[in-house]
Length: 152
Image (cartoon, rainbow, N blue to C red):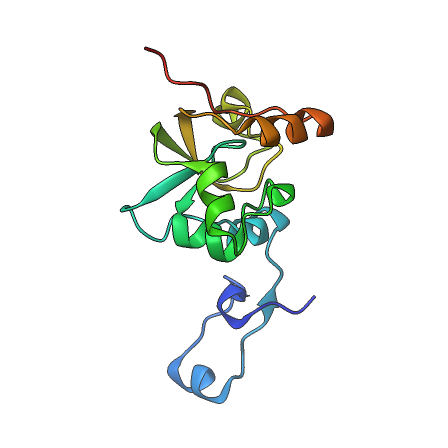
């Protein structure tokens, strides 16, 4: 397994000095736990302005991130590259945020029902509705969604 340079960690028991670092000697690589590697894949909002929540899973990202990357939890929503699809599948109306680093071990992730999703920042509650067409598509797939219609 070859890791990017920024994910390689020198072993703690070894002391490095300036000369070792310069020559690239004396540094043994230690493999990182899978949990840490998964964190490197976490997607966080690149800005606090313009954050949106996926209506199905509640992950928070900017509109541009949804447009460029889609939703890692909901690839079948096909948001990547589609402005209209991003608008139909995300909402700016959400409350609260929870950063989830290890979804399978986190009680917060279980409480939010995102324990099967990727690490990231999730909305506590999501307000909005899917179009009937998208709701039918999700029902046919047996998928649940997090967004709730606004109350009057």
